[in-house]
Every structure is written in structure tokens, then in C-alpha cells.
Image (cartoon, rainbow, N blue to C red; front, side, top):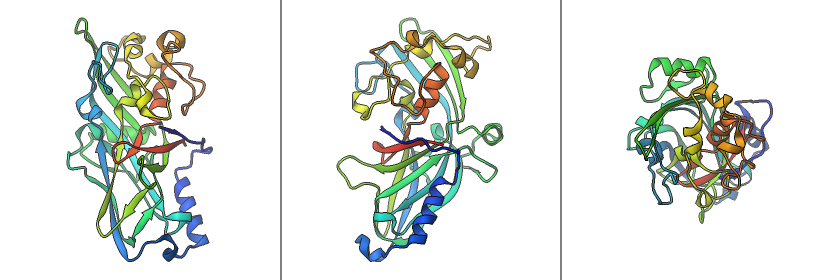
Length: 303
């Protein structure tokens, strides 16, 4: 999970202004090592933690402190794909944004967009966004109309609904996250491989979101160093008495030292600083979720 610089002004067109600037400068595609034309299909993929939830256990991907978590909705606004070859050559971009429920994505990894008949070779810069959607967004996989319209009307980039269950006694709590976390994910790369994506005659890249980030115990540079913990969510009180943990409850949870005790948690280094309540923590973790090819890391920058 790589840290990025803040992007001021909240412009959804940041990537495309960059692409336009690179296009104006101009580069000879022969200098990038590619030859001929190819196609790139950009696919959406849900990490297994979104589809199957997280379970208590001692494994690397388990929750370590006695809870199971499942998601019933994981609706995300996503798109604004942009990429270019070395030194900004051959910039490609698509401003399309979709609203998709990652909980119910087909396992075949459906297509978000496609770049056709473009220069082949390595596109060393690859980026996408989880923006605040507007009326141009499309409904990707039959998201309920109520959710789709609310995302646009309220500038939400996420609607996440789920249940946390305590292993010791089977008691459970429902939670609902409706949040604006517009983020640019850029300079995506897979460890041990060239940065970005390779375009050949027929190629593809998976954009992946990781649902377990909500339960990370900090904002590490490498995911292998994290623990997944859920006691903090269980300890939040239903302050407004509506039988679901939601934004008012997260905002009211200001006992940061108790919810996220040090040294177990490290709250620095994320997209939001300082973290003053549980809502800040949720939004900060959501702003780090973007990956490619499953585990390929991306730099993140809040819009």
C-alpha cells in the first residue's frame, strides 16, 4: 500500500489534464519499444474478502481478535482510467465512470472499458479513480436504483453494508458505510514486474478492490506486515438507536486511544491525518483499497 501526495481542489479531471498535457508534448512511439497495434481490456475484480467475507483465525488473511465479517453490499463508483508509456508517450484515457456492486460482480471479471487499436508495449503509468459520480455514471451490474441515485445525489463513492459477528457468543451487529472517498490510484505495479501494464494483440488488466483494508491495524507500505482486527468496530455504540452502526455512530466514536490502542495500531501515514474519530479511520482505509492484478500496489492520492 503506497502513499501518495494530496491532490487539492477535488478535480475529477486531474488524470485527463495530465494525459492532455503529455499529448501536447508529443513522443515518438518508436522510442517506447512497442510496435504495431493492440488491445487492452480493463476488467473489474472483487477480492475474495468482499465476496466471501473475513473469518476469525490465525491465518495471514484472517481477523485475529475473535470476529467474522460479511458484506451484503459493496457498491463503488469507479473508472476514469488513464495510462501512458515511458516518458508519457501514447497517452490513453477513458472518462467513463460506473457504479458497481463488487459483492455481486460476475466471477468472469466483467469489462469496465477497453482500449482498442493502440500502440503495443509497456504502459508504465496506469491509473484509475474512485470518484464522486455524476449523472454521466452508468449502472454496471444492476445496482438497485435507490443506491445508484443516492451515490450520484450525495457524491458518495461507496455504499458498504455488512455484519460483524462475535465468535465467543454469536452476537452480531450490522453496519452501513455511505462515504465520499474520491481517490486517484496511480503508478500501479506488481512486485517483481515492470510497472504498469503490457499491451499486446489481446491483453487485459484487472482493477481490484480489497475489502479487508477496513480492518488493517494501520497504513503500512507492505500489506504483509499488517494484522486484521475488528474489535474497534464491535466497540462502537449505536448512538442514534437505529440498530445499525452508521456515519453518526462512527463520528461519535472519538475515543481513539481505546478503539485503536498503540502500539497495536499505527494511525499515521494514511490519506487522512490526524484521525480524530472512527469515521476518519474508515474513510482513510477506504482511500487505500485500489490494486491491479489482485495484489499489485498503486499509489493513492485523495481528491
